Length: 300
Image (tube, rainbow, N blue to C red; front, side):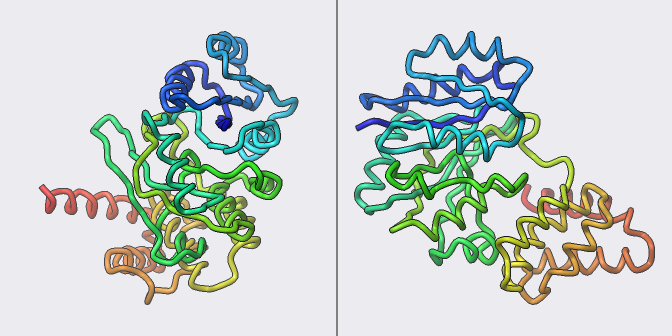
């Protein structure tokens, strides 16, 4: 059996060695290939020098800069393995992850799987295990308010002609992949064992802007049910407030169904909408900062 690991890269030369080392350690006795697809980085020569030190790795440079969805699809098309694993360039597989995931997929007869992970930050590590209550991707993401991380995805290569990323999405690509893939999957599963370490502190991991156009594209293509719309909006209206994006806050707040919110989010929405009406929206980020500080004190 052969394993293919797909890694999109962009300015990754400074940390990719640790990522490739983690793949090698996780592969154990399996035959494997690692396909790195670079998005026209300015450090391509340095990246090439690092990748050349790994005999199982192949580096491909795209002819035109696009996005990670295109990069992953290029890698998926090139993959020659029986199973395909996805990994971001700054994340790491844990030892034995590949073998344990394959066994999980075989036992459950799954052709697509994602799962739990460990967030790694300067202040420590934390496991995130978000098993679905209902095996419906929109319900999982926007009613249960849980998440999928690309680096936890694996699937059978005989489905690679339909398990593809939507290249029109410049944001929410993992959510789109889950929804699209679940529609084509014979049987998909959630692995509750955290097998991947996600780097939370690398620059660019968190959004620094709302990119409203990208969110609207996702909503138009994937969301019809008002409850799912509300769940999607709930995941964004606080960020819009923190980023002081008044227009984005209004857009998302208007689409939230208050009866579906937990108490703390109801409070935030009520305060935000009130401040918006009286022209004091600029105070909301400060209010949220105070709210978080009080919450931390209560936990200590």
